[in-house]
Amino acid sequence: MILGEVSGAFGRRMLRIALMARNVLKVAPGLALIAAGAAHAAADRLAVAPGGYTPMKPTPGKGMPVDGGLTFQTQYSPTGLEALWMHDHIVMTVLIATTLFVLALLVWVMVRYNSRANPVPSKTSHNTLLEVIWTGIPVLILLVVFVPSMKLLAHQFKTPPKEALTIKAIGNQWYWTYAYPDNGEFEVTSNMLSHEEAVKRGEPPQLAADNRMVVPVGEPIRLQTTGADVIHSFAVPSLWFKLDAVPGRINEKVLFVKEPGVYYGQCSELCGARHGYMPIVVEALPRPQYNAWVMTHAGAKIDGAPEAPAAAPAAAAAAPAAEAASGTEVAAAASSGE
Ligand SMILES: [Cu+2]
Image 1 (tube, helix red, strand yellow):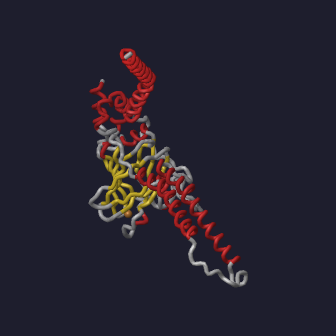
Image 2 (tube, rainbow, N blue to C red):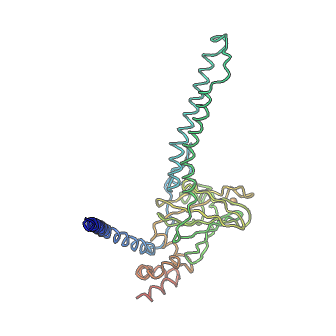
């Protein structure tokens, strides 16, 4: 009897182990695919597109304000889409419904209880049920707004992953500099284009800059901001990004651009006489094109150190571009890898 129970339990355990093993085997090809995908992504990250870099032409109406625009710009980042959804579906719904309800109550009171229609007013001063309702419903409305807004806040300030590319935006009176510590520490100075020059290049006047902040598309970027003199603010409406650039400290937030394009913004903290003339231009490019742009700078490196061991095959492809741009490190890595 006891032996039978023991062997029954043993049998069940063996069956469970067998099932687990089957599940592991089922998952294994998936894991292999994920690993292959990761390796592919790592190789992509180091690929360099041939043909160097030509500034991308902006798409009219994309990443920039439009004439007669009433609401937010179309969003091109995950947090932007989430925020826009919250604005359109939650905040606006609550706002419109509340406004209409209060308007209806006002109209009802004015028509039904004016002195002509209701010459003898009621002396009622308390109604427990009504008071519970008009306290309870606003509390529920606040909860409905609170939950998604806290979620959005948390998503906006999520810590960037360890392998994220770091870019630093530095506000100066009155221009921006962009530093690329993971790409060989070069810096780009970005000044506003004159009205004529912007029009000539097919860009929106007062928003166009001579040098853009070029970023890779479809990956989280650790964007840090700081100020060189006074407080500035790095803001790009279509990417749902606004972060103060404060002297003596670094602020940090994830920038994620969902599709290639040119996105315009402006300094958004009153910073002095030419505050209105320090636009921000973010150009998001696929990795190989981004890497090609990186390689046009002296001393450029394709990526930070963590990727170095896997760099050989992609770096070999990168070598011609690297030599052209005198980026010796990648070329050296390529020749040592052969
Ligand atoms: Cu400023």
